[in-house]
Length: 152
Image (cartoon, rainbow, N blue to C red):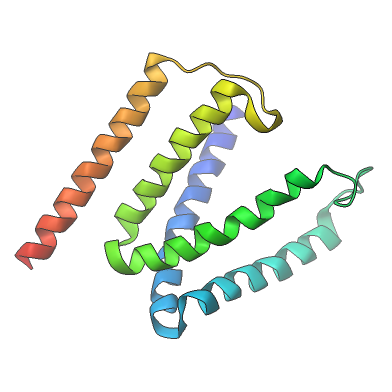
């Protein structure tokens, strides 16, 4: 089951990169905020249909949960807007690796301190090595993109 979940997460990451590339082009033609609006409108419609047809009945509603938990919905907006702008300027690869670097660093802090009600998973040198390797990958991807642009 763990392997399946990891493969699904990789697939989710791949779809985010495709979404970023498409939204970057769309944003350059119709505007950043219109592109973000379309993403959230279509996403809301598809999710509403999924809820209607597939979501099992829950004992708790969105009105019953602590209000800070609803903040997660708002955090998608800056991500989409930032990616639409960033992809236009630095490309899909650099923008995506930079996002993953930010995700990895913040997720390790959340894990280590058990923030937001998550189980505590302590920071190790192995985890530090992963962050450093991703930082190095970001540097090399940026450097090679910069060199390719100069040589073009």
